Length: 336
Image (cartoon, rainbow, N blue to C red; front, side, top):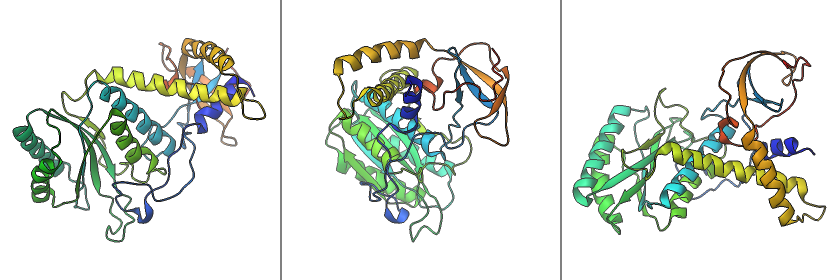
């Protein structure tokens, strides 16, 4: 297997995978009950008519980036979990709060008002409070849901006041029930930076392995990652860059491990480190151009390159290391 082939293998299925949805499709606050096997992280519906061409002459599909795509949704969730962890190393969130809704149809105005009053009440009682919210929807498969996918938010809370779980519940529940009609509120105290990342990862990646609770039916333009103004300890672009770099390194190392291990599954650690450094330098030196292509209707892998669509080369696509498919132009009409 070539290095490119190993990287492709890593992109499509190396990460520890997400499992299925909780049994019955109901909103599960705690654990995974599905027992589903891990799934691959490959994009299920890459963009037609577009390819990425690397400076080394390989081609890659362009991810769709949609929440209803299992691979893209999980990658987004894992990136956000790493952002939370990097940020929590600087200031750890003290609480995790799940806010549910009751109305079958999403009402953004009502939710914003409830959230604003909640934040005001918390700040009046506890002083400094900053929140980071991740939006989701239920599956609509629970017996009482009648097929409606209700929105809910997973919140991480930073505050100078510790040990205030009961106070938070006392303040939030009356406001939330009065404005939204919902009373399913869960508040937990977090003990570590890893706990903050685990809360996010378990809720947004592993339990929802089929992206069944991804926010796919919220109105267009709805923000699914919602920090208050001063939540992040460092700028979000820097955190996102750190997260992308972290996952790119992990995925490349996994690919090389699969490539270099012997028949007994053993590998020389020193050799792996040496090969990794060389491969990482090659990967980071690679640039990419976005191309328009003509797809062949009779085969998914065949295409004719047409023209580049931008002048400035890109770095590694989406920061996730080698693209999911790297191959020469299958039609045989390479533009160079």
